[in-house]
Image 1 (cartoon, rainbow, N blue to C red):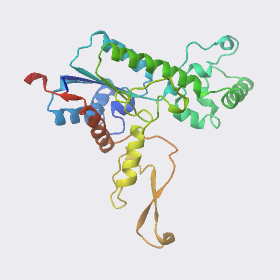
Image 2: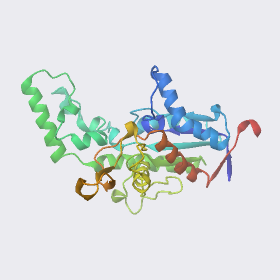
Image 3: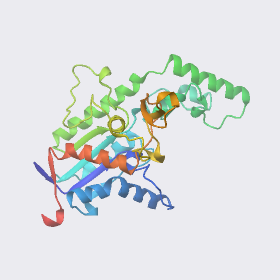
Image 4: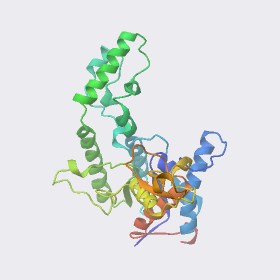
Amino acid sequence: MKNISKIYLLGDSWIEGQGCEPEPTLIHEELRKWRKETSWNKHFREKYNIIDSQIVNLGSQGSDNFGMFYQLNNILKNYKNNELILFGFTSKYRDSNSSVNRAYSALFPMDNIINQPITFEKLQFSLENPEMFLTGSITSEIDNQFQQEFIRDFMVSVFDERTHENLAQQNYLFYQSWCKHRNVNILFFDLFEPYIDSKYVSELFEVDQDMYFTYNKKTCFDKLVDYELETYNPSDESTVWEENYSFPCEFKYKNGGKSREKELVNRNAKAIWHPNQYGYEYLFKYITSKVDKKYKIVNKTKI
């Protein structure tokens, strides 16, 4: 078991810690620091008896995977073998394909749809709300109507998630191979949706599931959903989600509403909310259970 004296956390708002409550009134950078402390950093300190300088939380609200790969590249340039990188994938639909032909953008003031972050949420509502893709530079009502109709047509007849899936597989294959080649201590995991969808994977594409431990398994979001379904108590108003949502759980009164006693009703998820501090604590325990199988986190002042 390898000793680790420095931990890097990479991810989006789920690693920054958005959703912890109640949020204090702070300026942007101070608020981000408070979120990171409340959601992840303090748990690492308390569990492993380490100091602040041993935890580098690079989580950033709204980050895409390309941005995180950029940060990862910077870490790898000066990487030391006593460091551990925990990389939380965000939605691959946030990542754009810069190689797509954008010829028509010179004819009409709109970015190619595949060339901008789509995100899970936009995919869900794009047909009903095509304005999500508008550039804001179109003022003509006729042109605005054309743009909306074009976006609907694109989503229905052209959009293919395999484009993003192929990019994701290329990215992961490189970083898995590189980290193995350089003996980098790194664990990958999915935050709220799979980065690599196994249904699109070739039989020749080999994923190291010790390195990418949520591959073809439940995401962090799914683990929280399961936790709430298994443990939620209707008499307890607290939840594991931001703004005290009970999600994906909902409740009804028994006996057709005649009883004042509530019962749990399971329903399908239609949105993604952030965890609150209790949700992050659960995810910390889940992720570090994987860490502890391979690594020993030590206080660098006692080495």
